[in-house]
Image 1 (cartoon, helix red, strand yellow):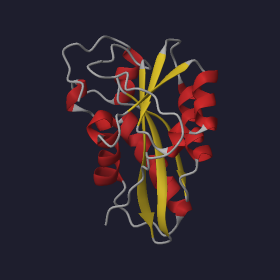
Image 2 (cartoon, rainbow, N blue to C red):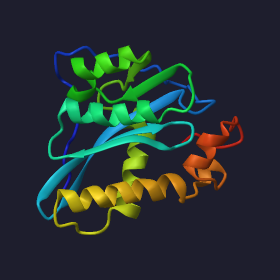
Image 3 (spheres, rainbow, N blue to C red):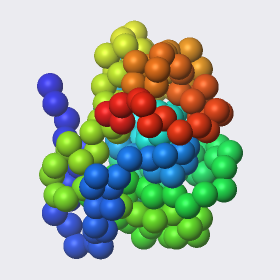
Image 4 (spheres, rainbow, N blue to C red):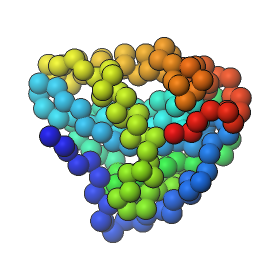
Length: 192
């Protein structure tokens, strides 16, 4: 069964899509974010991810029982604290309540990160974030965890393996962390 994690018909400010035809040239120029649901025997939980669009490295994450803005901010905080480079950054997401919230927008503003959002319900405008969700759920989060704590350990281990050990064809068979550390231009590699 499918669980919808985005409600974008709300009154909060939405930002324009700054990523149309933009390809990142270095790590930490563009962060993409999304929330996906994951299950344990206890029920449905929500995984918030912040991924570097250049290296595909998952920079921040938070697993919680609810889709609160404060939980999504925890993933963003982890991404900000994990930064290795001082450069201008765009943060791209859907138009969900959490990303439009005052607390989230203030965190972006405080860290000089420019917000960008999809145009309505077009999930293809956040395709990389959706792809990362799929990779984690289809390749890593396959074990039937008994509760949130067990799932939390599985998520942490899965993200470590994804970042450090899983080669990507789009990264020339390098891992996200290898590409992130090298900080070299990937003009010969595919963006999506």
